[in-house]
Image 1 (cartoon, rainbow, N blue to C red):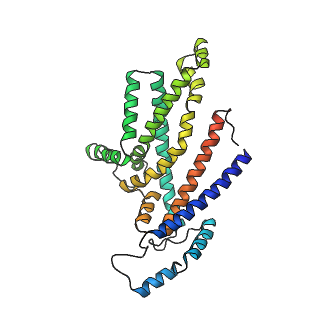
Image 2: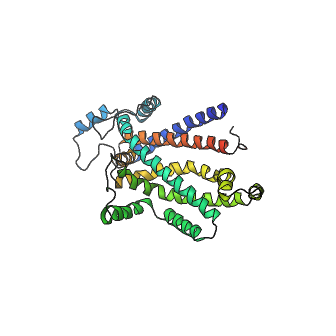
Image 3: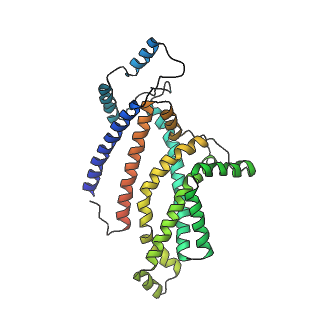
Length: 305
């Protein structure tokens, strides 16, 4: 276990360095800069601004300076948000994005697991067909299209939830449902497939032969083996939830990291965009590591090394 974590730590450091280096040079390879606008600044003012943010230095010197600061978890000042550092922006936006992601994943796991198990146990029934059709629709419809539909239905026709904002639980329910819907569809299909495979094994037939009820067989014996594909999917699902929240935070006007990331990309705010990329990369690596550890805990036959 310790050796596994040490290896993952080494790979994480290498991955973060590769992502940092690639992002640093790609951002600066794009024509234009953070201080270019339709109204051209006087040359003297532009030189002073570039000097303030150390952009007048050679590119290699900027790279090593930013790399050293990033290693100390100091992403520097934002080029566009005056009086704010990137660390301040992340500290303000991360709790919002984390709350949205956790609620969306909770919704996806709850609905996906329950519908997948019911579909497998009641195979070829009305419930099975209905759940699989709903899962297919959830996967096929983009979350921003679903968000527009949800706003029309539950804000205008049936005013239950607010259209936007942050501060109350009901303001985050709609975006969480829209964000978690496609992942609930994937989890439902994976759970159904895994459950059907497990229900055909000999030890499940033995459990039925001993007189156990369907509920006992599913919960005590079948579910643990059936959710292994779901556990493997949680890593990519986490990535999808993090990237999918970028658009939904804009639609529902949530002050999360996603809205700042889009603004940083469009306005060429190098430091803010770099900080967001590094935080997302770190979170994805940590979540994938936790998924691998949980996989070995669910199935003792799997060894982490």
